[in-house]
Image 1 (spheres, each protein chain N blue to C red):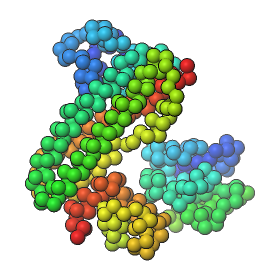
Image 2: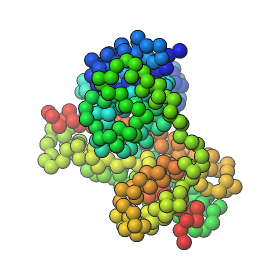
Image 3: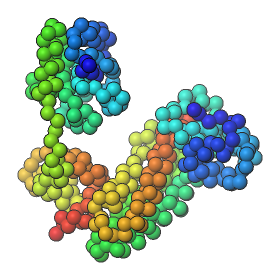
Image 4: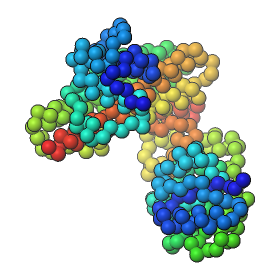
Amino acid sequence: MLFTPNMKLADMVASNHSLVLILQRFNIQLGFGEKSIREVCKQYGIPDSFFLLICNVYTHPEYLPTQEEIAGTDMSPLIPYLIASHNYYLDERIPHIENHLRRIADACLPVHRDTLQKFFIDYKEEVVKHFQYEEVTVFPYIEKLNNGEKSKGYSIHQFEKNHSNIEDKLGDLTNIILKYLPGDIMPKERISLLFDIFQLSSDLNTHAVIEDKILIPFVETLEKL
Amino acid sequence: MKKRILLIEKSPIVATGFATILQKQATFEVSSVTDNLSRISERIVVDHPDLIVLNPALVDYSKRNTFRSLIPDAQNIPIVALVYHYFDQQWLRSFNGVIEINEDAEKINNQLTDALNSFTEPAESSELYELSDREREVLVELSKGLSNKEIADKLHISVHTVITHRKNIIKKTGIKSVAGLTVYAMLNNLME
């Protein structure tokens, strides 16, 4: 069942715990008591239709908002939301995983340690580039469109084409840690690292879904105006 | 109980006709029909068919050689081709049976029964999981940064074979990126 504005915010989070991550990206503080989604959104000046759209896509992978729903939603918080997500990945999750991985790599043979670290440093660079492309090229393009300016020579289809996959390598890292590092190397740390990676993968996956199901159709509508 | 068939066919006339013919027989029934190849995995999980009957025209030409591996859930289920166009015989031989559109009920029944009886599930030996020597060689060259073409020249095999090895390496290890495969090669001491 899709979430609605009259639902208690606490009930929504209870039904999908990952939504606590979303609250942070909208700068909604915890301690909201029994307030409804509508009340909390009003308090923070967030359009509740947009907030619910994100929470619904995040929770129901099969949910595909229609063009009308997208056209009828105030999309002004979309880009700030996406940038807040990028910052969360780059400033919090990836450094956390990196530290964790470093401790595990330090327990390996030097040659294995160096390979593992190089793998992660390269991955991090790839993610930074991926986000930078969006923030430097794609988002400003969308903001211009939204202000009624047409830009020649770029369209969202180019973004779709260049939209690289940044989840594959996390899957590779999962397999390496799970299957191929010798079993006696920091078993407890590894399990906890695996959970961190699973969580980041699933979050990145949803992030990509939001871009595919919300951002792209929204920009397509703008381009037709 | 009747054996359940998942039918993958676009034409409602053919699909309905096929299901009706089987209804009059005791052995098989069409438990579900789809015209969309990408729904196979989902139908298999939901319906648990004993057999798949597929119109080969629905398989994209470029995927003919690999389409079986694209549906891992169907590895243990025989697939019979339901044919009313001309297809390359060699390709039709990769199916577990072939039904021609003009065949009668008895012949159809026999074809389906044969396909079911002669089908043996792929053996689950560790050979299917561990990398072969050749796959290891390809993996090492990949880790050194060589392209498919360069690897083909170096190992005296075709580019097509290199690609097949790469697919198998990914399938067995679950590692998709060259960077990840390099870590694998190092951890397994495959690099000198």
